[in-house]
Length: 462
Image (cartoon, rainbow, N blue to C red; front, side, top):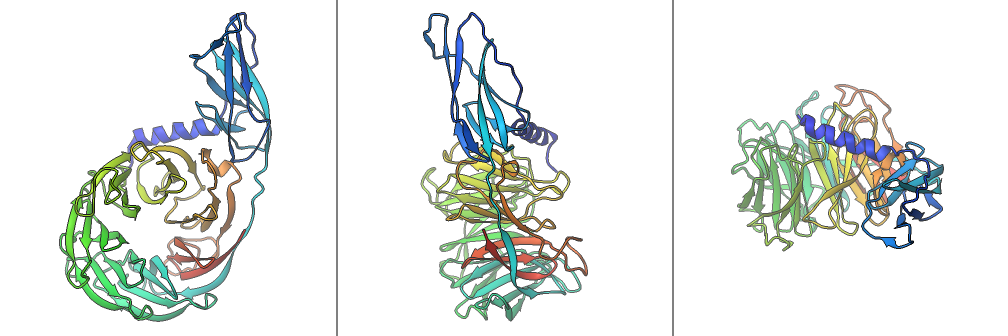
């Protein structure tokens, strides 16, 4: 469970982002303060305000501590450096204080004005097993299975998707597992990896797949060394599989698959005493979702800390993001990491971490949906749209373009959502209610794995 300290810290941060203070403009004989900045701003757009302080002789005072606030309460958020983001459409005051001096300007916050839809294009139904993660490559989609419905989660399903209106099952693979939580395909489409949890032989590990015929994968072999606790998630980057095994304090395992018939361990990395839930690798950096230890950034070839796949080296970490750190997506062009907090009790939220300085990650924004936590994400980086699976709350399309600050759900950034199966139990032993596990954008469509129903294809129209 998350610590009370971490929960309180996040609560204070959210309260600060939601509110502003009221303050009347004052004049005193000790000098003047003058606020400058834009007279209008769109919801969610970050704009800059400045304040100039002069003493009674008119001389500029350069070392005054400026305290910013917003009125009315909840109209927006302003950071300590004067960056402002509007929440509520209408007029608001941006206020600066320096000691007993105060000044304000009025800003008119305009509606962001976004809208759109996510409509069902096609479905591929799995009714006897719960569906887990998915991966799409070319004309094929691969879905895993989770726990036990009427049948156990021991299967990888293969779908032909060149006609997305009618995804067609072409094959299935039975593994020694009670959950195949994750399935990934290398970027060249030649090798796939499926995970094992709850295997009958107690070895678990990963199974490597030959995808020469992508619609009919062949098993290359199974790698189990040091992975008996089970494997929850994986990532493939070139000749390496980055493995997130089950178990407290087990840590990251890196497996060399340059010869897929003879995989070998390249390295281990322990980032904390908490469960390593997931790993995402990009630009030579591994982003470890380390549950209550937060987000850990590791150099596995980037060079910033001298690391490599055989010698992973920590770059930085951020722990104070609510705990139960579940997944991450790194967007290098924007310098953000989108981090999911899988807390069913609070519920959890999406955290935005600024990593433009990779050595000093800092949280700058959040996005929340009432009623449940997020699960997995996919980012349309060209369009600036984050697709977030939200279990029983369905799929969410969120505008994450531009600079991000404060509470995104208050900024008119929600573009569209889809409860394509209606509302109900998630997961459900028999029902077909919405229970979204993961999205992937491919060829202008969003392919979604759903725990209750299998594969759903959605068309975004924004």
